[in-house]
Length: 231
Ligand SMILES: NC(=O)c1ccc[n+]([C@@H]2O[C@H](COP(=O)([O-])OP(=O)(O)OC[C@H]3O[C@@H](n4cnc5c(N)ncnc54)[C@H](OP(=O)(O)O)[C@@H]3O)[C@@H](O)[C@H]2O)c1
Image (cartoon, rainbow, N blue to C red; front, side, top):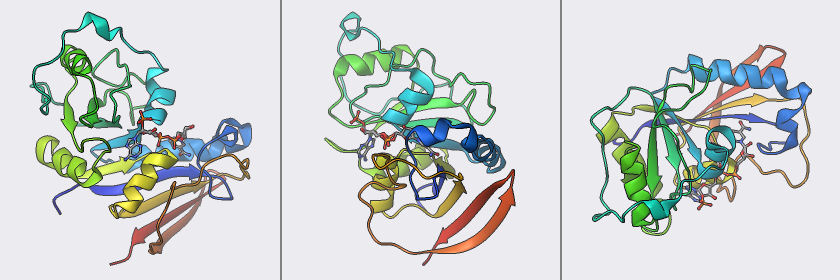
């Protein structure tokens, strides 16, 4: 396989939603704890999230003043010498994420210390590239206006040696991976909650596809479902 093996790992509500207030209720805590435990148990080479999830979980919406940076000369992939072994892959088509370190800062060993990689399109500004270079954050281009998932995954394996990658939301990024047909495994922790009408499904704009149930476990008062893609 010329791309990483992809496991979409998510907490879902009883009605298959993955965003919204239900995630921060006390009733969801045990499912969330199991989710983080499974994240560590998978021993993947990294995790990937969409721009909105990265903002909510790690950058808090901070962004640098790009007027302080000269435009970079060439929009080419940028690799750093100091490449880690565990990666946080940010799918950030417009370069909207403001990082204050090139590693994730988090107490959870499933996230903390992960080397950040930015996946960009050619819509990103040249000043943003200079900023990322100044932070020693590697970036790759995949697509002109929309992220080409297959190209991104090919580069993640070829450049960084990522063989196993956890896809950890949100709904929009999961949907893009699902439509690209690259989700090999599903790991779903079901929280005992029904979500609100406006909350988003596991995959935005999904296409029909079939998976086989591989494992079911009752752990930490929660249900864990594991599926593998057929064929
Ligand atoms: N239940 C769980 O386990 C779980 C896990 C993670 C996150 N979440 C929840 O998910 C929510 C966020 O999900 P979300 O669906 O709104 O956003 P998301 O998937 O996290 O991020 C979407 C953004 O990613 C960028 N993007 C990257 N590649 C893309 C592509 N191929 N196609 C389209 N956009 C692409 C776009 O950024 P631009 O807008 O900059 O173009 C897009 O708006 C949060 O509320 C979080 O709590 C839940």
